Structure formats: structure tokens, C-alpha cells
Image 1 (cartoon, rainbow, N blue to C red):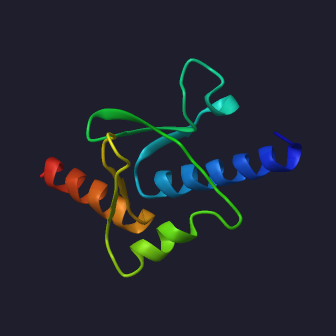
Image 2 (image 1 turned 120 degrees about the vertical axis):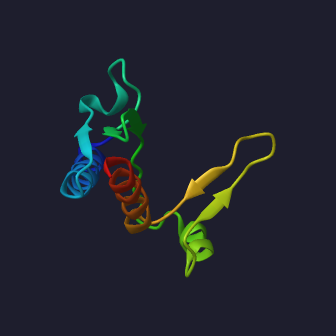
Length: 106
């Protein structure tokens, strides 16, 4: 991976870390992008549980995904003989997490 790609990766990981923290989610970028014993880009904690996230950014990538999810809340994807994946925008994700936290705290 070249320097430009590494810088882009760091920048996007740092951006998502900030977005999550601003919304009240405990989040920390994982140094070395999965090069340590933790495999992933960002560690999060919410609703009493730890989660590991992977962050991907592409200049022209994911066009089909963006097209499919346009004007929808969720996109459910599945390859043959694999589990479903759920895709949503960050706003929807934060609404769900913070809504669950609010109900749990009351």
C-alpha cells in the first residue's frame, strides 16, 4: 500500500471515529489497521458490548450499493451460502444506536 493510500485510510478512519464520538459512542481507531491482535479499523462500545468495524473508502467504488439504497433505510445483501449483510447510512445507524441507548437508560 502506498503512502497516498495509507493517508487516505487514516483520514477516513479518523473521520468515522470523530463522527461516532460526537454522537456519544465510545470509539477508537485501531492503530496499524488490523496489524495487531485486533483485526479491524475501529473499536466501538455501545449498549454494553464491544464491536469491531472495518472502514473502506473508494474513489469510484460502491456505486451499485449507493444506487440500490437510494431512498431506502436499509439494504440487505447476501451472497450464496453466506449470512446477510445490512447496509445503512451513518445517520440511520446513529439513530438506532442512540435510540436503543435512550430506551435502555430510561
